[in-house]
Image (cartoon, rainbow, N blue to C red):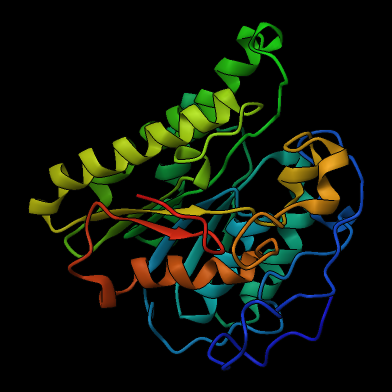
Length: 301
């Protein structure tokens, strides 16, 4: 990986960033561990500089152990937010590393592992997060499942169900449970994808969930806006995370991952975190029902 920028405010050529970050052909069983990923993604550990934009906020982030979720946890913590991290129990080692980095910012960090496919876990997660943090005013529905299947005849009911439960049902369960805790000024941010607009033929179930997340975001945003609660989404393009090597992409396609973007490269989780911070902060007070694309130039409607 090339030398990182000094921080996220450093003037630089985005087409030259991470020029030496070359993904290798590799595979891990689900859910995978970021610690075993080659090359390691940039989560902003050495580059994200906080400026107090989320001071005193109380945040819940799912899929928080690695990738975009982990980068968001680090950024939120450095902006002054206390955080509850949700992730699968198998991802504990990755999660503890991120929790330690976030705690170094001087905020409270709590870890509550579990399976987003289970409604009871999702509801309990919100209740425990609000209790641990002494309230809740920022929810990031980021946890996701992505497994490629070449033919629809090979896409079994169990995977289709698991993908929708992880990506869509969990968002619904968590949002529904969180709303009674959210006061005016609170925010909900959902993670969708470029796949909502440019669905890959091998990601039928995943792309379908991401289009659903867009519609859910816009609908619930209108419902909650009169209560002073803002709901928005972030749509990443091809970003280097452990999701890609746990059958998110065919292994033979990893060495060209992201090359079809106008920037000609894959993104890094550190490049997504500022979008979540913007939508979480008061700077975006008039932004509601928006899907913010962070796609390396891939066009979204």
